[in-house]
Length: 341
Image 1 (cartoon, helix red, strand yellow):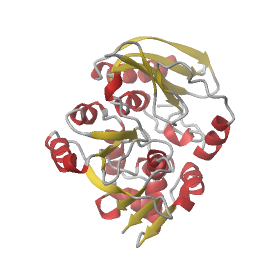
Image 2: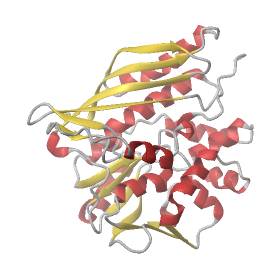
Image 3: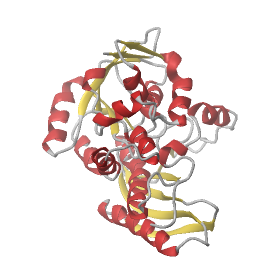
Image 4: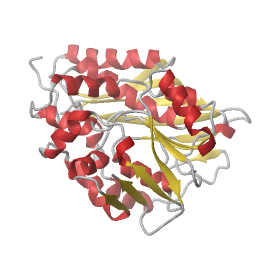
């Protein structure tokens, strides 16, 4: 491609920092006076949920970001996969999606066509319908989706309902933010980038569907706030957690690139926001960076009943999903998160 799509920070690294966002949201008046609004922004959850009957609630979410790689078709697939994920994190099923497009009129419109083609493919794979969208002329490229899904009001996965002794199961490898950062300066290997792309374009639909057979107490997807930032939101100041560093699924090269300081500014924002709540024991710098690393289209993190954890894990692995029990929920202690090497 002759034209460059790169912005200063692509994918979920472009999100506002968790600390900044928390300060802004804390000043907004609460608007959940409608008893049918089951999930709003108060809980920092992945999507809003609105009840319309005893059996059906609507799940609403949106997500968009600048490119993190040069191929517009793959970028479109990643952005769509990421946007669809929040419905799956709530335990829902995707029904419709709307395109969100920012694009410079002076740029080759064939590039925009490829972005939207990639997005449409993932919407179709989700079993949903693309029903329209909105576009504006902008100086930089940005793309994503506004997504609507449905869920049984009694079977919603909140992100903050962990229970004592729950096991934490993660369904994708970590490290894609660091690998994309290395790729921007042409330091990422083809193998590492291909593995990152494969992960970022894999719908969380399949893991979510399997989870419906098990006792899931809470769920979130790992995106811009990194593994530790999203785990912090799950714990909701009610519990602490122990993370088994040796069980964490990580793209191998991400650790090498972290040691070479091919890291993101967003990862440092995450570190600044959450580090005082984390205790690392026998964990090196590279692994710390991977845990703070903002993930684009990351995996689901389930807090699942101890009695179901092994069966759930085996079911995920049987279906070819990269999954691992990465920790457990423990009683609240001095620190919120203990990462054990």
